[in-house]
Image (cartoon, rainbow, N blue to C red; front, side, top):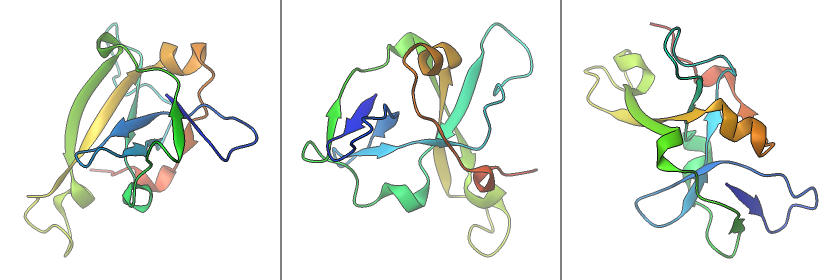
Length: 121
């Protein structure tokens, strides 16, 4: 969980550490639970390619807390659903982050909703 240094509203955001050491904000396409059944009530997030580069550094943000690993799950999905000219064979994937709803609610995290990121199979 982080805050941007130049944000006067001091909104708390959720992000993911990337391979290059930067942090990228994550977005959800819905606030609906990612799983229809079970004991987990998590929201599915991913890094929107529009938000990935150049990434956020210590000059840009203050990390407020690191979410406990027991409250996060990971998965992946094919880029573009594995269809179309951008990924016709489905070999490119993107990482998904499943974050328990309690993390978002308790810390009053500002969740960015981008419905266009949902892939309908």
